[in-house]
Length: 149
Image (cartoon, rainbow, N blue to C red):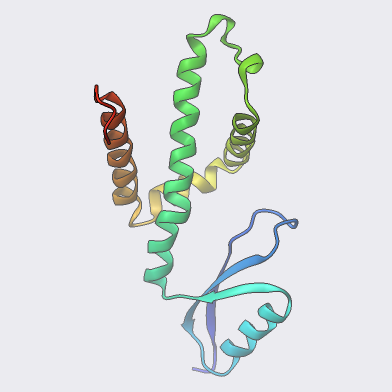
């Protein structure tokens, strides 16, 4: 009964990221929970408290959608590059594409965790479906002869 439990989700991948966002999911807290939050806040973290349900729903948007979009683009780029002479598009890269490729490399380096999130977040299937539907709507709007959305 005297044991307190809080789940912490640090939302940063690097020591260089400022400010540090941290989500606290209080499972069983009383006296020490607020002190722990104060300790993190006074260390410079931006601390948000959430229920487990709200955390999972938010992570479906923040992580599931985000990573899925990058993974989808990675696969589409790989397919398109195969159709380019010698498979090399580096002479055509823009600054923003280089930045995107950098993020894709970060995701690739942590693919086990990214895949786990895609499989285990209970809101992931509906989040991915929303992204696919949004992409299909956007595609249809660009295919209209009059260019209307």
